[in-house]
Picture 1: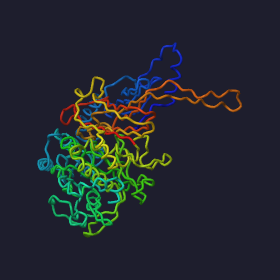
Picture 2: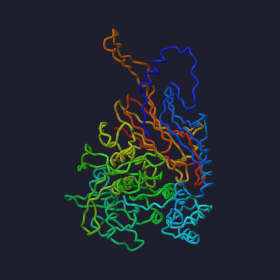
Picture 3: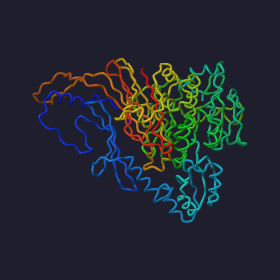
Picture 4: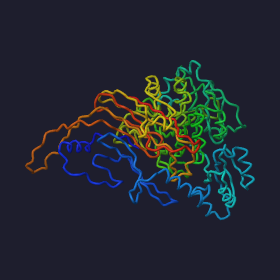
Length: 624
């Protein structure tokens, strides 16, 4: 996923060619080729295992007209194909052969002999939940280990699992993945402190924040939690196992007297809900949901549904490299903010030495989505569970995540009217604000790599509270519930356009986010479950192109041709991905003028969750 600025040697060649009359007919193009005035922005080949069909999905930029479009062709014949129809056919064929098993788990069952296996079983939308699901699974012969809404963890023999796989009320059966857990200095580094005055004046107690962790147990009497209120615990807990969750809450919502002044880590006047299951926490309808632990693909539908229907802001850790069995970032859900980590170099007040944290996961999931979305500071000194005045050092994405979640809570407190229950806008706002760190393109670990807008290791970068608040106050954002046939024209262009006026040399960043329909990615080929695909582009004034010819070869009699100024080329830059539900564009304005933001929808499927053709869309833009 890359931002592209199309003022390049290709345009120079086009402009030079425009100076000469074209006497010949254009060559016929194969469907996978591009013309001289086109460029491939991104391309990927997908294979459907059941049907054997291979397709090439390409984002193509028409350089002459400044247009971005999709092309999907058969990888063998080059003929155009309907990607959604092929994907639906693949899923039907897989269900007919494997039932509710994922391909990987079907192989595990076949190889297990008679030995029992642990599995995650997800009921279909509208199927049994909680106690009803547990009762029916027990009746089928499975030992129920845990139930969380429509998702149950069980231990069962292969025969029992095969029978469940043929039950029409079961959506998917996959290998059981246990959730694994992945300070004030962090608050300073993310620009949180200037946002804290509403809390110091007593505002914010109405914000409900959920902390979801395995074996959750928080030392509620810790002195840093003096302004928090707590939901009664669901069960007695053992503080001996509460070190991780106490430290997480300390990074999210603590306040401490430092050198005679109060400094807080985040939403330190919030009402806290601590639970060990997703469904148990969501039952309280929290506004902020922090999940530092990993989550499985089977949990995606429930997490994305919370954003889709309840408008909950969810923040999840991308996991740490030292967790066994994890090959990449564990943020399988689409509608949450996936948080990776960076190191402050021990100087949170300085950005110059900040680097990507080598222990933070950043490898993309099977689908190819770029994760993490954002990063937070990994190293913290935070509340300890051993005593009310104990502080401990922790590191990992478990603590980068609540640092960003706490920042989001502060922004909601300050801008309740604009940001309350706006998770899609919050994702866009945080991404647009993440431009404060310096750049050293010679060091690929620095955060973020400005110019690409999205870096493989650090996503959009580290959000900044002051910049995000400035965006809200300036009104340079947009959020709406949109429907394909109502808000987009026949060519897939969003009816609303937005503009930003920039001086020459100003850096501009635009972030687009939208919600994905709540589905289980394990049911989809390549775990690519993106139902709506949007693209982001920015147009601007004409840019004069100057061509500097190469110097003559040494020893020849050629002379140097002076610089040639060619006809102007309209500014156009874009971001296009087939699999992510966010797009970021960043550029330095080549000339002063007005730059227009455009959104297009090359693909829009029907949401299987509620049969709608709608989604939530948000934009945020800024300049510096």
